[in-house]
Length: 209
Image 1 (cartoon, helix red, strand yellow):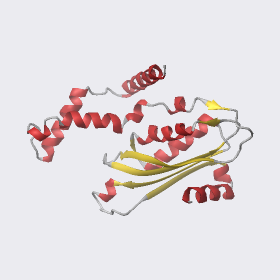
Image 2 (image 1 turned 90 degrees about the vertical axis):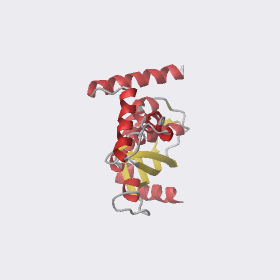
Image 3 (image 1 turned 120 degrees about the horizontal axis):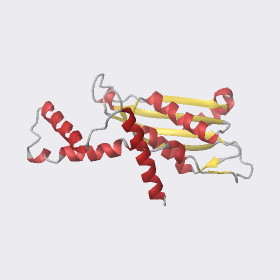
């Protein structure tokens, strides 16, 4: 049942993509990788590179799986039996694996996600999956942070949402300025996290502890 639901979601996402632009076939994508190998100065027909185009496309299916995932559907199942719990729910150190939309190189780091329930809670793994939805796309960190927070706020209608992402960008460490030790930190605060300084400070202290 769950598999059928996932396949239906993926088909819907593919139809939406098709409306925006014509997605190339797998064969066309593999040919593009072959062209890039030639552009880099190597021979795609040599033994070590013969299967590289297929491997790259297989990798891309994993790297960019977020385009075929629906965050609202992930957060659609909630629970109201919270026994009056109305304090922070925090999931911290969620692994972030994304790719810079400017250079298509990795962004690697961690996300810390919190919300304060308003009568409804959601399974903790669902928060991590929402991070995956947006990280497994071509991204800029600032936009990804906002997307995660706004999606949780829209779906759960909590009293507040907080998202902090700390990540290293290989577009800075392996090219350009070559600053290997730099980390970028972004945050998005909604509701009480934005309005109440004490609530925001408590969240920051908890994710640092």
